[in-house]
Length: 188
Image (cartoon, rainbow, N blue to C red):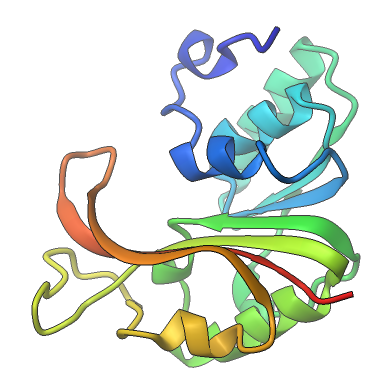
């Protein structure tokens, strides 16, 4: 049974798309990009994934390290890493990047996505959720980066889309905005 470690440690709930993806993606070597304090990494760990959790915030990584030690979770590897580098050094069966891309340097997005794709094993999955700004739904939050209509779909041309939409949603702070949500499988 999965314990609600997030509420115990005062973290926001696991992202709903991570929960949904785990109904399809089987435990494997996973990467949680922009993990913050580890809300998704803790969940993946409890499901049996071996999780590398990366974020630029050293304080958040320290907190996740403390939680994983306290919980005897030896299948989480928290690391300080700047996603803008686009130079991942390991391959993964599942890469989760939820509400993270909008905080990176816009000039690095294509390189970051290319690096994610390169570091995904054949038959592996990428989950991306990112804010959008469109004519119909201009983004009300001043993120450094937002996706345009169809931009994420085009970046994953040739992958199998398990899920893809560009729907209006609500962030955990209540802000309503349009998101691109994608779960895609890399061809074998």
